[in-house]
Image (cartoon, rainbow, N blue to C red; front, side, top):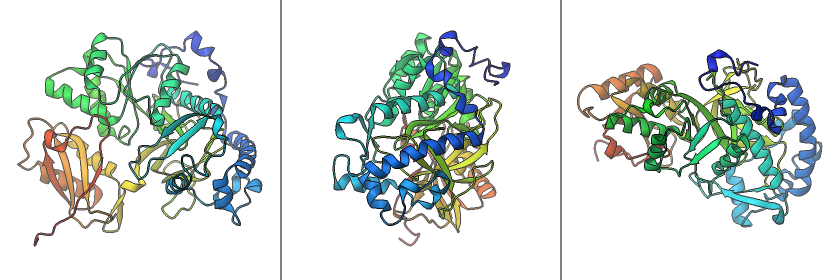
Length: 461
């Protein structure tokens, strides 16, 4: 393994002795196992899981009745089973609150309850047992350890402890035995105060918050490098893997940026990007089985260059197991081979399937527009917002796009036309670019909405 090679020495000193003694470190061999070995382990685990779900999940008993014999469904035939959607789980809970027929464990075994944000509908309750919590910690420690996080690090977190599943990350940091300085989401003053102490070498945040700090440094004439951060681990939304966004954050802090990703219905931390920065490694081996599907729901082989929506199946889950759950995340597979020697595939997330829109028959993700707009920094901040009509995924060109400008940049002049031309050259559609000042664009200290929906008015209105 090459984790402690000289090219990574800046954020990965040699593993400390107390790291080597942690149980989960000793059991990390599956991260380096051949694909066939992982498949055999997963197939064996699935045999127990499918029997458990068939026996205990009223939701899947009803869903699969007359369609799938779950007790006899081998892992290799999993694509024969219907997908599970978030809307189905929300409906199950609304019909039988608080947990619904989706709960496969007895209520007295539920030890922690989270919920989703409800940004795409009704909030979903996420219940876990003690065993589920331990599984989440194991996957989470793999993910964050992959990023380079070690017990000697001093970590400032801007992740809320609840009610969302991201709060479970605090337990992962305890497992990693890092020093932790927790600050609530959006509490910029406390973050700056923590930086000023000189005690922080790593920060966990959304890309939006890291960009917000970069903008603030530029506006106030602050050299972000003076705080001594070595590493920013970003997640919670797409963007941290976009080269222009990453370069801007790294330049502002003089630090390395890597990404993590999870999904509430599956595990809060499921992917972690190693310091080779070649995409996020899947870290759920043995606990979660991933698939990739195209827009028609057909399987896509997980191999470099493949694109599609990620689908997940729990191989070990007691409280709320899911089978073939559509994540809504559109991914590109970057590699199945990495200098860190991990054998899992790596991904970049292009965006949410829900955020995709269609222009003249072509699918477009807001992240593609961000990539183009980011080449115009420092004149713009990189934050963009696509304006779409209500209840429609199709928009006729020119596509209205609002772009936040940096302080000192004028809203008049040729910049808007230059950006529109660049979008057309790269993405092949015409855009109507509106440059917006930072105050008018709105503050995004946590996450940035990439899509806004407004009623379009014709020129004759």
